[in-house]
View 1 (cartoon, helix red, strand yellow):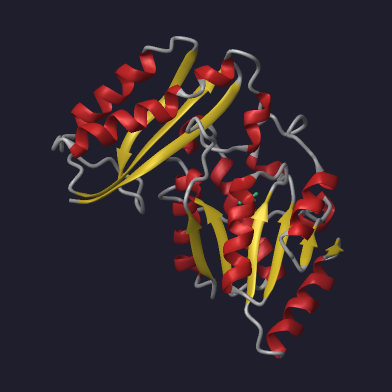
View 2: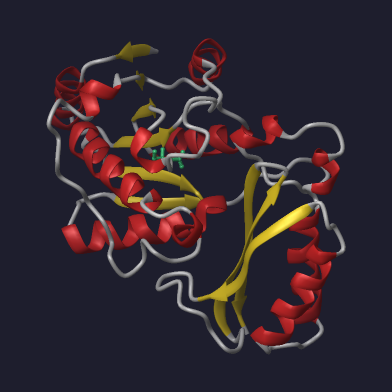
Length: 282
Ligand code: PAF
């Protein structure tokens, strides 16, 4: 695996791969890698000839009071894991490489950026779509791999790709969970003592919704109420949202017949966690 710091060099390598008829797969990350990230790298490895992974803790997707400075940075461990997965190129740019002095151009999906996490994290999705657009221009991938855990992020990216006509296939891979069903996240390392157990309430609430829909319940209002009741039974966890929405538009849906996203976000202490399930069309 070669580590590349320069955007120009990475673009040249990608162009060279394309000249040889190779398919380039790209996994954008912020590092602090876990099995969820590695599942994306494995999917890219299976479907593509050349695999590029980026590690860039993107400052523009963090709010002023969020965890940008303390976000875990574990480059040595990450590099070892990526090399073991036969990654070809690790792109590890500096902030200046991605946001040169005076950079003033943003990419924002105006109909989606203020929804779900965009409510309590204003500017977050604008930061995500801006950096992903830049990374796509640098890496020029044929396919890019994202995790279903960040379902609203995936919706913003799919829409950006359609609207701006990026020639990239977006592949969204299933959530990878711990044995006790906690969704894997780089932020799980923040959970202290009891909080690790309290965090399980998110997946428990989603499982309750799945059980009720399996039993025939179709009303989103009732399912949301049931999910919130499970959340309320863990008072140490502060609910941000519990919603049932269309996975593309992120608009609320009244009944769950149509294939919906059930998504939850909550604070465990100061750690914000998200999780979701997709209910199939009934
Ligand atoms: O999902 C993430 O890790 C980040 O939001 C991404 C897509 C790498 C953009 O910084």
